[in-house]
Length: 213
Ligand SMILES: *Cc1c(COP(=O)(O)O)cnc(C)c1O
Image 1: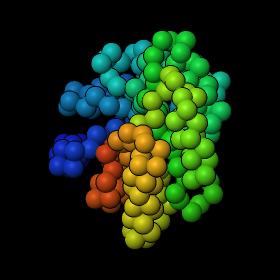
Image 2: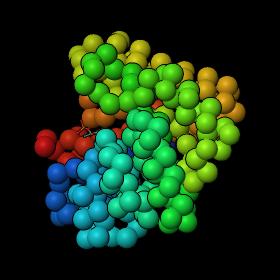
Image 3: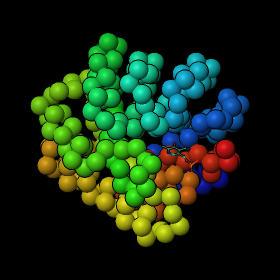
């Protein structure tokens, strides 16, 4: 299954982030040994522990809701934070990045799903951040694009519609705010095909690669 997903990503020029949350080092190494280098976790503690124990050339993505007080633990090494869902968090990432003398790449997580349980910025809150970014309020972060999660539903048309909306926002805001938004992180095990056809550049796939959690 992994090789098939890797092939599909190649076809679309997208990056595969293997979501390894709750999975053991051994399971992760099996996937690593097939050539996979991008891995995603949703909990800081688990991410930090796995990073210490696994090969150093793994690129670690933080994909889940991030608490401000935990940013410092991942700031020295995190490859990409997908889940910026409020401005205070972004300000904290900027502060910690400065301490470690780096610029941390991030994505703005936008709420595109209909359920209210999902984290994410509203369009207007994202626009405030992009405005402030333009006047260099966060010099130590690099906003590289957007992330979104579609509604959990069997209705493929609704999922497609939500992904399409996110892709539209990405190109609209890139122009409006004169910013290079190159990444669009969307698509999981159940909907990554739809996401790829709607312009995803990064899919986050867990259970299809590692089995059910
Ligand atoms: C768990 C998770 C995924 C992967 O989900 P699967 O359905 O196992 O592919 C993707 N994105 C986020 C934010 C997650 O928390």
